[in-house]
Image (cartoon, rainbow over all chains, first blue to last red; front, side):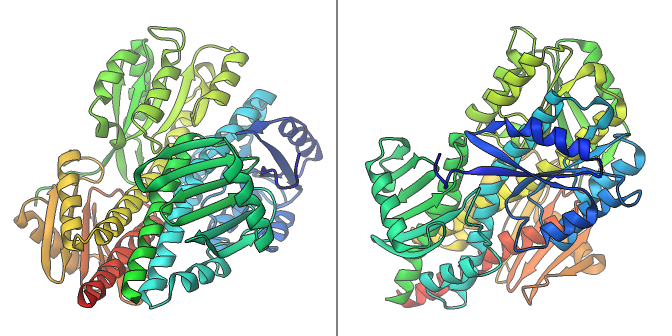
Length: 287
Length: 289
């Protein structure tokens, strides 16, 4: 197992040590899309807020399992409010663990805080926990690429409209709030190459040398998951490394689990191809 | 003013008529984001396939509640695969609902199929059903709006790159919209104005008279939200109609439930604004050529 293997992070917030312990044991052995799960435990709302507010710690968490009653009657719901409204994280799946699922108070809360589901503590068993986390991670992954595509497109189009070059636009995106990568876990690094030249790289792929090593590795790989003659399109994946090639654009990501083909295709048509075409448009504007 | 209130569609597939009836009764009178829920009943995998065979039909359905064992042992799961892969629909939320207590089957379904949940009929209460439907619809709305925004931005970029004007691209989008939407329910109509000219209208906003009356009602008495980040961008909202404005681009959508403002801001900032910026870029490009 290499240090760049992707993993999913699940946050468990509960004031009962037993619940934390059991959740950790059940989830430890789970593998989704070929990737393992790392469980992060917090025993109060305050501890969870302290953790999440540190260095973009929230960006890699796919699912949070949150107890309702902790420091106070509504601590868990306040934590959901903090995640959605203060951190403005709408990607993380929030699961409430409660004694009375579906009560009228909580149904109001579902709509208010965009909660993704309930786990009834009384019915909680290994299977239910496994199924819930599994579904949430799949849901998170199916939203991750469209949400990234949208953020990236919006940012780069606005930057080019303001007169920035593609290189400057991408650079500003990477440094900006749009992309707080953490160099581990999921989507730990990326590199963008145009006409054979690396214009930007970050995270685990920050060093030019590492980018070259991965390019070589992917070029030699026989694990082509999609190819199409139009625009010479090829998607290759090898050991958590992924590359999209379209026309003169080579886009590499590190820390990618083995997702369904539809997710790669969605990234291709919604992000990679439009970006390659925007590069052409910007190029025509310049010359 | 011709319009219909938006509603969400929930597909219920079960070979037991009782299960379908109970679900219908349970979801009657519930509303999410101020919109009613309509149940579409299907008794078998085969009849569902026929219903969904109009490919675009499936995209207006928010949730599928699907039994596993119908004509065949795994009919429900095969149906999920068809929706995800053959119809390429990632927006609908699919829940398996079964009377079987077979833990092995649950694990198999969760691991190998793209489903959003596995529910046991024996533990299903009305409240629980409601919370699943509410979560599912919330999830569906954000996926659907995001998907549509991506499609439009993609279409506009591709068009500029192929030397097709942004007006032509938007007009194409509207014609396409008109052919696939049902003029009722969710996202029932759309109309776009650029530089004071109406590019076109579709669905409930197809006729110029309707566009005019909706536009007037929005401009006279709508609730206005300004973008925090983009200076001249704003959202005007009244009942099920929403108008997005930036520069000389005005975009009206009909059949929008009372979704959180955040989702509408995403449409403004990630769909309407980029389209307008791309339009400006295309004008610069034309001058250059």
